[in-house]
Length: 109
Image (tube, rainbow, N blue to C red; front, top):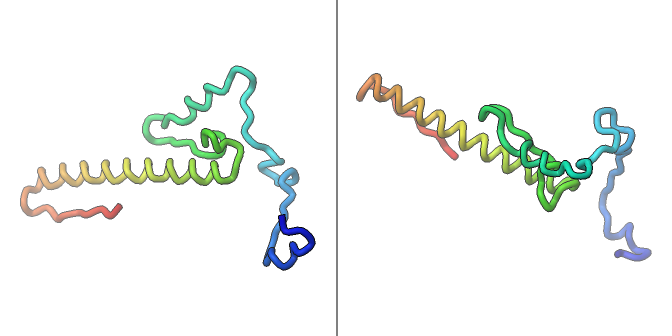
């Protein structure tokens, strides 16, 4: 891409030994033949309390760092929305119990 002038175009670089990483060992997502539908199961939260994210659930960006990031961000938004909704419903119950004396609670999203 850069020809012989590559050093002029790259300011800083880093290389890792992906295969030597203690917990990763160079792994990436690969479904066994006929088992790719298991990913759809992993995309569903367990009891609305356990959520999975990562490159293995990134659809067309599967097996990429970008897919891992986007999957994580999507799940984080889902969890944040669920927490906000739960907080609002809990606060509504408090207001109902204490009437006009309940302190308002606001949630920023």
